[in-house]
Length: 309
Image (cartoon, rainbow, N blue to C red; front, side):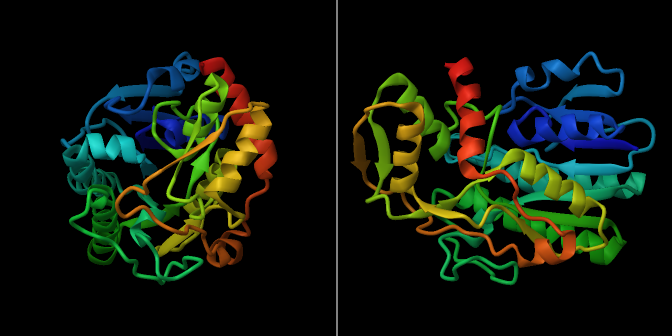
């Protein structure tokens, strides 16, 4: 099997490259390194079945030879990144998805889109099921990411219905683990970096908003299973174990063994108040659910950040 992964030098993308190589695939990693890092894939580059292509998939990409799978993971994925690169985020979700669908069509490849729980916006349904259409501010500051992913889902389904492309859509909920960037602005690296440096932990709002955190190996397993089933509608992958942000800050402070105070700041515009996946579809379709407890996943991630810092 020959698998192309866009955004393959990113956090989740690099874990996918590693998994597909372990499963015997030839892997083509495509990344323009706007948010991805070469250090995420350095340990793979001596593998003769691994190829890295520095390229922005918002522009057409030509690849010689057959391709069995195209996994489209290229996109800034944290608020600090997509607020810094709003136009690039919109382009990779629209033009980039279009280009990769065109490649999959030409190569008769299976295509998997990395979508996001952000398509649900600040949800009025809780937990979030795949048949919920969302509550998104399309002209708000986060709209560049939310709407890019909503468009990408729409064009994937259009290619499936019009051209018969064998497509998959995964809606990824908060995922964490090794190779996250300390400076990517997401809540977990923020808290861990602050605790390791002895700084106050910044909680936005009163900390009552919730998130659900899935360890990266569990997510990768779900993605691999989704690729193997004949199902084309979106599938939520995430951990339904919900926690408030304030509780999460206290967990990380205790894990690090720090005595940092918690500092409250205003809640950013359109920040979701709740986030928890309904994974009934994944359980029934893929026989999948998360296996790594949050305490264990956080311990492994902390070891990674201790080395980073």
